[in-house]
Amino acid sequence: MTQSLAAPLPVFHDRDCDLSIIRGKRVAVIGYGSQGRTHALNLRDSGVLDIVVGLKPGSATRAKAEADGFSCLTAGEAAASADVIAVMVSDEAHRDLWRDELQPNIRAGAALIFAHGLSVRFGLVEPGPNIDVILASPKGIGPRIRDLYVEGQGVFALFGVHQDATGGAHALGLSYAAALGCGRRGILETTFAAECESDLFGEQVVLCGGVGELIDAAFLKLVDAGYPPEVAWFECFYEVKLVTDLMFERGIAGAFGRISNTAEYGAYLTGPRVIGAESRAAMDAVLAEVRSGDFVRALMSDYDAGSPDLLARRRALGERRIEQVGAHLNAVAARAKD
Image 1 (tube, rainbow, N blue to C red):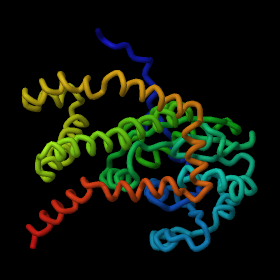
Image 2 (cartoon, one colour; image 1 turned 60 degrees about the horizontal axis):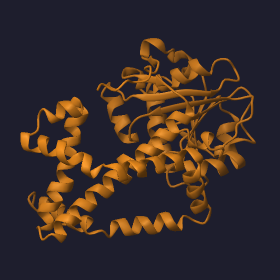
Image 3 (cartoon, helix red, strand yellow; image 1 turned 90 degrees about the vertical axis):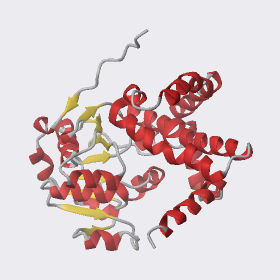
Image 4 (cartoon, helix red, strand yellow; image 1 turned 90 degrees about the horizontal axis):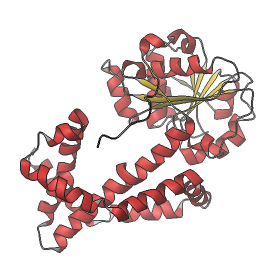
């Protein structure tokens, strides 16, 4: 039976966006990591000439921002003089940044732009009624967004207006997203809640949590059954990119049309066994935790304690056997170049 879909989201392209709007603004990019640097560089290359970067005193990225030709101020100083404040620091830092630096300095009529809806959706940031609040979320990792922009291409973006104090938030948000290069591909209009909740769910169930655990569990199952770790690494990890690249290019059905009959038939028989009733129940639980705010409360509780749980789990991940095998095989490949 064909599955029905909700009505498609409104989509905007370069022809629907007025770049002169963002070009006429003073933009403060707060943070200069993966996303912040990409936003600043793409904005400038799109003709936004009045850009400042807001950083903590002594920030490790200050030298990079200055080398790229940007003036650096504290976040509060940058916000005080800006028409548009683009918040590009990590989600868990938004609460304190807003309370201590941005809220006391942001001007009435200014616009606050986020690349992810978490801090607004879950109340880490509660903007007053006299500013615009906009989502402009390019769907990609910062350096890749930048590379595609330079090549004359772009990535999709999710865009939304949480608060329109000036009456111009919608046009401004589209102008900003287009300046990132996203109008070359497509800017889809949604809400902060839809973007944030689906993003958290997708990261946890598929992109990071689900894929990582599936790869590691399958790898260990083969190794424990007596298969060489190198062979298990190739079959359960190395080839993942080959197949997902094919899916990205052709869709799942199109990819299945290009793989062997053996692989395709096995997928039909086995996929629903691995992702069965127990997995779907776990997905229900994850989505409920995301929507209720339980996940964000756990994230912030750990952050306030100095992130001991996050750091311990990060260390443990690096010690898994699959990482050791991968390092060995990468060294083997490197020796081939000697």
